[in-house]
Image (tube, rainbow, N blue to C red; front, side, top):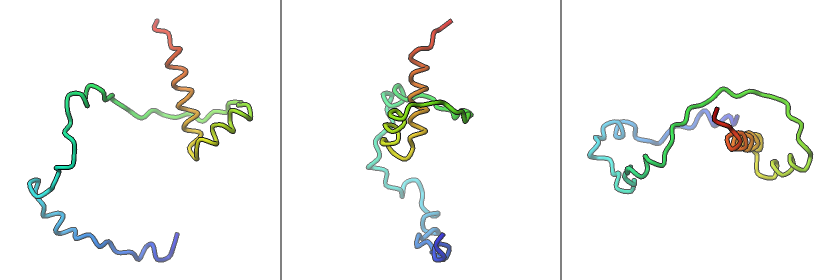
Length: 90
């Protein structure tokens, strides 16, 4: 960490910010939350992740790596999508 990083002082006027009321805050650029928004949303709850070793061929792994730094997350998402698509309701 940069030695100066700890010496940076916020230039935010926290007292002024704390004194704002709901009426003082301009929210005109925020879109309203409509019924359509809520009908398209879904509940998300974090799940416990497992670290496992899975053999992957070099070409497949190279492709995922080419997708960005978070390639492991993308691989996990692809596995989840596959599993959900092939899930059988018993």
